[in-house]
Amino acid sequence: MKRSIWQLPRARMAAFSVFARNFLVWRKLIGPAIVLNFGEPVIYLLGLGIGLGALVGDIGGLPYLVFLASGIVASSAMISVSFEGMYSVYTRMVPQKTFDAIMATPLDIDDIILGETIWAAFKGLLSAVAILIVAALLGAVPGGWMALWALPVVFLLGLAFAGPAIVMTAIADNYDFFNYYFVLVVTPMFMLSGVFFPIETLPDWMQTAVLILPLTHAIEVIRPLIVGEPVEHLLAHLAVLAGFAVVAYYLAVVLVRRRLWA
Image (cartoon, rainbow, N blue to C red; front, side):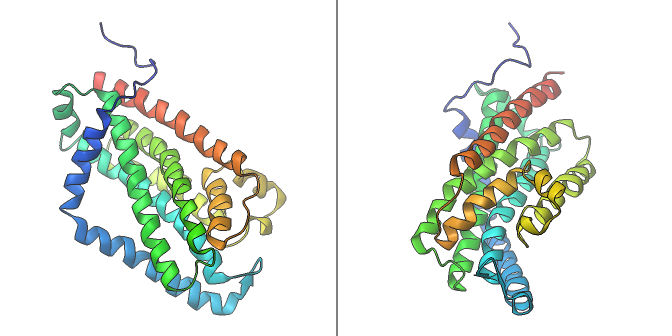
């Protein structure tokens, strides 16, 4: 009997077969991936952190390079996950028909979306690790080993952004459709969630608005961990990220089912 598209997703270990498949493909392209993951943060941190930082000075008692590095760790993961969840997943689902091939095996849509979600979050984690290494080499990780506690938060951030990206993929007719998401969702979060300046400098109404955004909550946790300071309202921030991850994952499964079962 055919399942309803609204049925709760099943979580099975079979999803890791999809993760493993993507990892093996990515391993063949590891050279360009390393250049992208290390090259981009070096440009950001040298150009903005050191260059602009010489003009800005300290922010909140932190050198601007340190302030920026912690924000770039989170935002880079967001962007990496969003690219993977949209362009790469769309490529596998539509032009390459990889999903059709996988569904000819004992795996189903629930396994595919769970595997793709975990894989996208893992790509975001790789990006964050690369930036953290570069930042540490530049002396922008004063928290030392405590900064490693930021990595689980980055993975949770990846899960929170993988779902919305796959939702966009499920309703996209072509690659150009993703411009809406990047311009209207990703870019505002990148600019307003505390990556480049404290959200306290925004007008009151805008501070309230940015508290809805998951990137804001990720930065509120990641920045203190990288700096080596206590995290305020830790559970509340993690709960927001987990809530985004769960709701968006469910919607992603439902919408991909609707598309592929139609």
